[in-house]
Image (cartoon, rainbow, N blue to C red; front, side, top):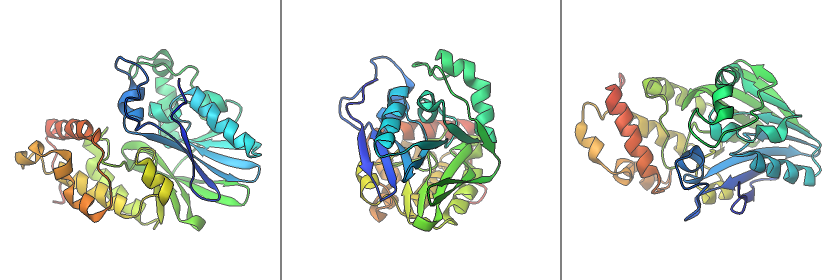
Length: 300
C-alpha cells in the first residue's frame, strides 16, 4: 500500500500523529474497498504518545505498511518499548497490528471479543470486503471499564465509552488535557454504525465531556485542525447536536432532504467543526439508517 501521502504531525512535545488521506485523486484501488470508503476518502490518523524510550501507539492505521512506518519513526526517535492501544475493533484501526506483533496490544474486552469472533472473516477479506488483513494480531491484554498505561513519565488512561461502536475506548492524558477519541467524534459528522444505540451515545458523550479535555484528536478529522491545536469541547457538542437532529428525521421528514452543510449549519457557524464534502454521502447513509430504523429521541 502506498505511503506517499502520509503526513507525520508533531502535535506536542510528546504527541505525534500519522495522517493519510484527504488528498484529491488519492485511491487505494479502483473497485469497492473499505480503505477508500471509510479511511482515505475521509482522512485517517493514528497517534503515538512518546516519552524517552517508551511509546503508546493509539490505533495501528490502515495497513501493515502504515504500522511499520509508525514503528520505524518511533524507533528512529529512540523508542525501544511500544505498547499498542486499540480504540475499537473496526478495520481501519486494527489493520496494522502485524507491525506490532511482538508488542503488548491492549484493548477492551469487548474489542478483543469482536476481533476474535471475526478474525477469520477479517483475515480472508470477506467481513467488509477487500483488502484482507492477514495476519490480524489479537490483543494480548484486555481490560474492563478503565486501565492506565505509562510511557516514560507520561500517564494515560484508557476509558471505555459506548459511542459510535459499543466497544469504544478513549485515551486520556489528564495532565496535558489531551483526549484521543478514535471514531467517537468525526469532522464533519459521526459515522453511524449502530443506529439503535444513538440515545445511549448521547448519554456517553455527556460523560466524555466530563473529562474536560482541552485538546481533542479524532482518527477522522481535518489534518489542518489536528496539526494546529486539535479540537475543543465544541466538537462533542456538535456531535450531540447532529445526533439529536438525526433522531428528529422520522417525525420531521423534511429534515431528510437537507444537505449536510445546511443540516449542521449552526455547528459550522460556531466553529466547532469544518465542512468536508465527502461526508455528504456519510450523512445520506446516516439519514437512511435512522429513518429505516424509525428511531426518534425520547428526550427531544
